[in-house]
Length: 104
Image (cartoon, one colour):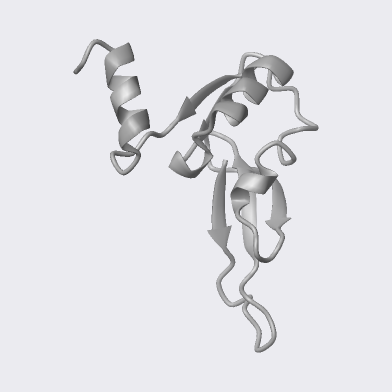
């Protein structure tokens, strides 16, 4: 899952359209939703993949979606696996992940 601003979509009266996409391994977009203005793509994280059977599928998302609620929803509601990015600008999360993997 990834979000992007649609180039050339900004108007004099409104911001550029921001789209959240579900993309397959080969790069094919299978679903997209427009993120409402004045929100972030985080709000669409559970809406976008809801209609899909994700049992046993690995869902990847960038650091913006690294939330406990998102991981829990993927595992419990969709029976999916996940790979969520943790960046060093999230020091508490980075430290916790390092401890889980035997690094201090």
